[in-house]
Length: 306
Image (cartoon, rainbow, N blue to C red; front, side, top):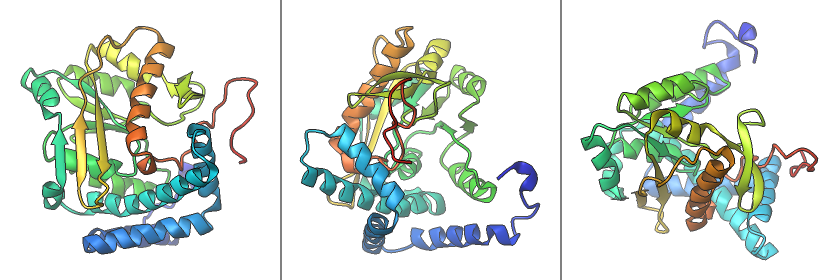
């Protein structure tokens, strides 16, 4: 919605549906654990039946990225992906509306020594995050162990953006617009750690094409550029729900060595490879609902119907 057309008050009828969604998230956050899982599973089933566009995007992504799977196996992965992302809605509600302390006992955190060393030395870092369905819950639980800033994309709905922003203030020190490269560099040089997830298609202008699951994908230059401008290490962070559906594993991998290289394509390829390796461990929990291959190299056909 153009800014000039936005109502002056969040109590305008245009925002009533948003208020209802916010209220539903507050209720969902306090549901018993088993009911959260059941509700998320139901959302996944409904999405498979009624959210045709998102289901087709998911099917296309999985067909492209896992050609080694049979059609039946691909459809099974689509089903599990929609379920995981349905549960992810409840996990996000929990992150935004409750104190994460009540879930501390559900987290196994590996590789803490990598971040602890950087913090002891007062060194800033770029945390390489990834768009799993557990993203916001992972960020909330991460704050129980280490504080960080975050790069984010503002939501198009200003009321929901304010709700989301205030919630994230509880577990991020500072949130930075994804276009604010100067702010990111300044925070890292001041010794802060900044969480950045570059694994989405942001269009042709900020990107180079690099392989992702064997497909040329628009991949942002920003990861290597930030590392080059700050001299800070890039440290991958992986977070996923375990197969028991009750516990989570968070893991810092060692900082990337010999990064950046100074070549945007080489650096983007390196980052994509790290993200791909993490996805392959729990592919159903990744955000395959996003059109990751929307932007194509010149001359190549579109991969999505619309």
